[in-house]
Amino acid sequence: MESINNIKGTFEKKISEEKKTAVSKAVIKRLPRYHRYLGELLRSDKLRISSGELSDLMNVTASQIRQDLNCFGGFGQQGYGYNVKYLYGKISELLGVNEGYRAVIVGAGNLGRALAATHMFERRGIVRVAMFDNNPRVVGTKINDLPVYHVNTLAEYCKAENVKIGVLTVPKEAADDVAKKLVAGGVMGIWNFANMELVVEDPNVVVEDIHLGDSLMKLCYELKIKTEGDVEDDG
Amino acid sequence: MESINNIKGTFEKKISEEKKTAVSKAVIKRLPRYHRYLGELLRSDKLRISSGELSDLMNVTASQIRQDLNCFGGFGQQGYGYNVKYLYGKISELLGVNEGYRAVIVGAGNLGRALAATHMFERRGIVRVAMFDNNPRVVGTKINDLPVYHVNTLAEYCKAENVKIGVLTVPKEAADDVAKKLVAGGVMGIWNFANMELVVEDPNVVVEDIHLGDSLMKLCYELKIKTEGDVEDDG
DNA sequence: TAGATTGTTAATCGATTAACAATC
DNA sequence: TAGATTGTTAATCGATTAACAATC
Image 1: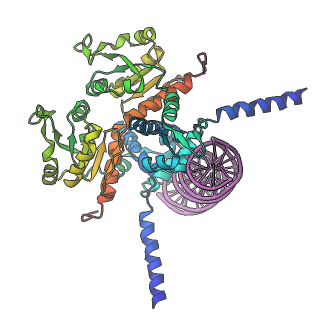
Image 2 (image 1 turned 90 degrees about the vertical axis):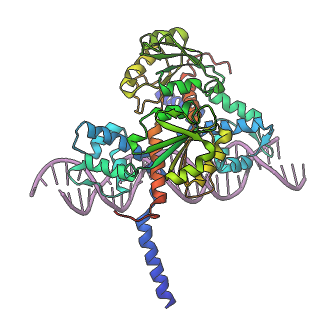
Image 3 (image 1 turned 135 degrees about the vertical axis):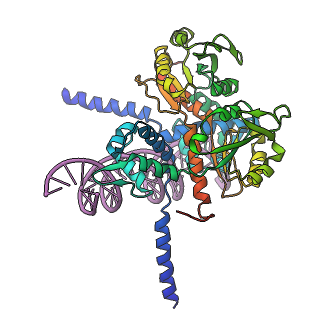
């Protein structure tokens, strides 16, 4: 009896594992890029594309493209390639473009305003519903058609308005506190521009840290390496 | 005779290779993060730190920290650890913080203005000298103390003013053209916010593409994965 | 059917981690 | 000297590429 249960358990585990087969981080990071290129192909009325063609376009190996796409299912057809519209649709689906997630921007400073002005969100099916700040001079105003509320009402608002994404453009000293409010309000994803690694208790909340400064420094490093040796070395 | 030359050649090659030992991309991407944490430790008056302590702080393995730092030389001391100030200085040096690179921002839209308003550049020893745009209504004005010139004068200005870094916040249709002007002006590093992979002919010019949209999509993907299964699946 | 191109397995490469001898 | 911790080599892990059988 016990041995039968053991066998059954093992078997079930194998099946569920097979279904998951956790997609690697490297693949996930590449998905948006595929989406971008396929969107362009679609706009240029290209109907089908092979991994070889896409490989030339994107500067990655055809092998990687096939491997990547196959993590999510067989989107192509042997001898034909991939149908651009179909593949674009599938990747859009994977990326949640059709989910209509609702987002708030917290921090109405320069960066918050700049993000409020972009089409970055609509383009991805994300609906911005409001901005938040603690400055009484901007609370109550509108920025790019978005009402600005006081950050004290953040959690409450998110809960009532079913906000799923919070964009953090506050100074890093305030970031932890605002993040707590977002999580309390049921927000499940935080896009963090606060120049620090945001730590959130709830393991179901995902965080994407943006480190513009790190990117700028990496540029300087590479610039330095390339130009080094061109000048006298006084080391 | 020939065989002697061959042996000599092999030997010389080995030495020069040993000196280079090209630092891996993964390590380079982590350098700015070390710089960030060490800067904070310095500000909090911490004098020394071991790879073990830093490991706890940064959430990476101590082994990786030691391995990473050793790509650039022995910055630590057995039995002691690393001197915070010294290590910070060394990493700053590696990252070109003391080089005083001069930078222009091309594109005086929302993002360009937001970047102009940050302290991101000074903090890394980069000197912003001007902004550029093609809109006659902003050309001639000042934004955050930076003069705004017409983009037609870009190459000429960069050459005259020894500009090394160009920040690209123009629409992607204009990006290639502006990049050409920057390169013509002797700019060696381009920080590209134009939502496309910038291709530059000159192999000595380094490009760092920022893809905020990709990051946002990745967030949505992870958000979707986490919340999937919580709701009815009408697939 | 023949040609093309995928899906998938196996081989290679690179990056991370573990272990430990060197040394402060 | 003994204890601590680096620098560095070896082992492991993960990601990329190559190869080819399956199949449209």
